[in-house]
Image 1 (cartoon, helix red, strand yellow):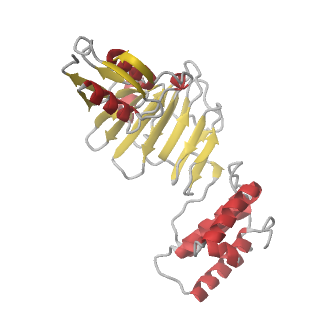
Image 2 (cartoon, one colour):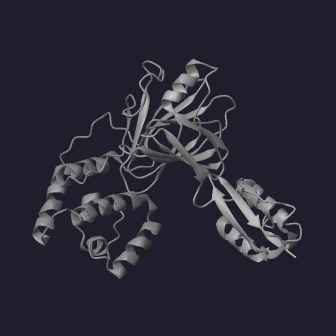
Length: 371
């Protein structure tokens, strides 16, 4: 069996054992390449790029015969060997090397697959949805990150914050943030973990929305061409508003700011066509970091139901409304560790003869009490 440690992308594309995995999904080949990736992490990116290329051939709109497919691969290999490396190509430190991305670029031209190159260039932001008078510094140099792969890519921002750029998404930001603000321009979907820096806000411009935070974890989803945009918060607090309202609020300090404020496990869906906000809980609320340090938080032994609800409120940072006087005789004995919030609520309500509903980002519990 070959070692493959020194294989290039084109070597993989013409290897029968590699194609047995990618093209025919043979179990033995699949197991081999999965193990091989673990044993050779330095070659994993090259292998996966070759896999993406091979799958593009397989998934073409028109089927290729074996001979046509072989000719297509040979054509790709021939072209990649003659593509000059441009000096202005600079890529993310954990991405593939320049030559391999040029191979991907040629594949785009040959196959018309519509994938984007993952590139890093010093250019002005190219986000078309941004409002032009947001006072970007004249002459500022920007970095443009494009993730055209099928996997999320984690990036470190100039202030130490982390951005996970999701598939087919793009983000632009300055090489060095301004002294009074940190700005990101996003097209697509990204998860942010923001370093707290006192009074220097972190601003994400996405579509027609501005998301403002000081330090938190949140996600922005704003696909180009879609009128609906979504911001969800994992921890901390953010404000979300339309860019026109944001500009007005900056120009006049006494202007009432529209938009919404989100806390942990809340999200808002903004409809740009109607200029409306729909605030709600995220579909799968997660436990706040402070609660993770206390494994006994969800263990209950003849515990009053009111205390159970209070623990859930503290653990998830959500608002739970209930009538304490009605629940004064209700108790719970159970372990709810490892159970999702809505399943916890369902188990609790079932045990005390209660029901719950979610209104906006609030949970309302209704009960007739316990004897």
